[in-house]
View 1: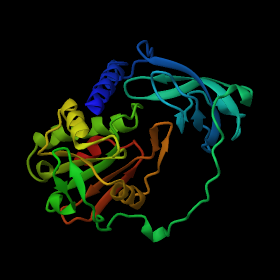
View 2: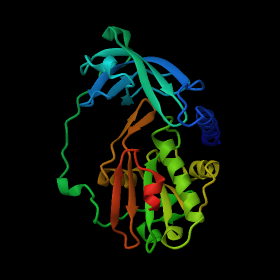
View 3: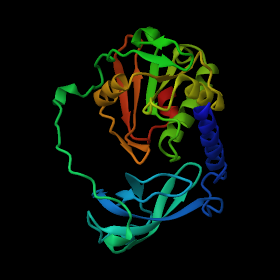
View 4: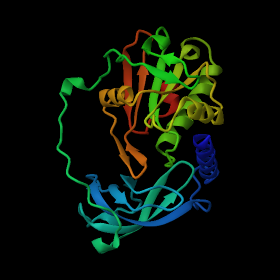
Length: 287
């Protein structure tokens, strides 16, 4: 009951975020949400368009965690280095989020703890799945509390991705889910091989995302259970899949910092293509 209530609150937040920026390409962002916060720079992309920031708790939006942020003005980030404490404004619209007004501040003004060093464990290069490899074995549970394995989808193209229902950032899990919603519409309106394609969203948060939570989440997305499956399961099973596809997952401050990977599996159970990040479009999958 408690988790159902939390999900309803989460979905209400998703509705609120989804209602923002309804004019595609609008420059004014008059309906955007703005959050003033602070953090510590933990990484910088070579072109300085992205900063990995360990940010403070953002009240009523997101707990403290480390994640990448796109900077709209590279002049603001030109002189930063790893370890610098900064203040910044985060802007969130329906489909994107970014930071600006970035300024260096004293480290003591930022309320985050320095992370403990973790020894790097290098996995054998061959352990990372590649196109042409067979889909690894798994045993998960769908939103209707039924067991699913790779054999469940054998004989049909399968498109799978990793999400979690409480993800607040519009261009992470919500974008993957919106893309899958578009794919579902195309699948249901088509004939031939596309009509046979199935969708699978695997949670990164099995402790919270029970079958019932996933069922409610799917209903909120108008998911057709004959086309689109949501899955949870033993954390070890999910960890094995994220490691196999090299998806970074780290629990921080009650939420999850993670990477993105989306996979097309052929009817024969072999991996056709792997997309990293959120740049893929439904049209390229359909084609």
